[in-house]
Image 1 (cartoon, rainbow, N blue to C red):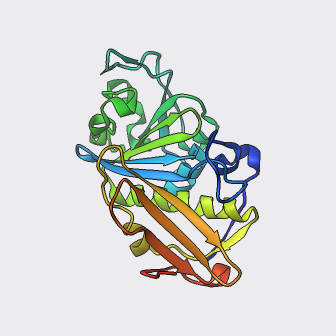
Image 2: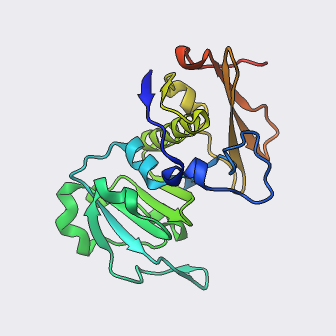
Amino acid sequence: MGLHAHRPADSNPFLKHALDGWRPAIPHIRYPVTFGLYREGKNWGLFLAPADLACIRAALQIPPSDAALVMEGAQVLNEAFLEAPSPPRLIPWSEIDHLSGEVDLVHIPESAQDEVASIDLVTPVLAAPGRAVPTDVGSKIAIGLNDGCHIAVISPDLDLIQACLQGFIQDYIVSVMQRDTDLPDLEPSLVRELLVPMPTGEWCELMLHVRRRYWTLSADREGWDATPTQWVCEGESGRWRSGWSW
């Protein structure tokens, strides 16, 4: 267990976004909380909404001495990807939280920061996600931020993808509680249950129900003829378990 800080509404994607016409089960969570996991060539693609870069940075725990190669104003022309339309810039990885709008970024380890000019970039990263991570220079991940709400995390490392999904789920739970929360641990084996690649166009919606004596967290696979994954715990004093039905 560990205390997780609640983020105020103006900097919390779970609280500041709303989807017109969608009826929330939790009044202050006004945007459906969804993720999709897909194979993208040699990479994995994790798509999250609503999300921001602060959540991703905290979950990944990439060394602050590493950098992010930032490409803003990414464009697609005639369904083809372009080289970066404006010169990319290098910023410390620890400073990615403030990026917003339409932006792509690629992780660059400290050892490769002098090689940036020779890196073969693809932008937007979603135009060719199988090529988005330049692993030849030690890069681990590429990220596409769209409209300040949707994030695509691309990596060949499933452990990093798992860390992102775990951080996303934890941020969602704290946002439902609307206070600093001593979260029950999310065991890696539980999160792995969700790391099943999906067909294109299918996704998973998360829903937390907080009851007096227990919590349940369900992951409903939209478009799948399958029973939703469901975990249960005894609230803040408990432990998440799978395989329960209520």
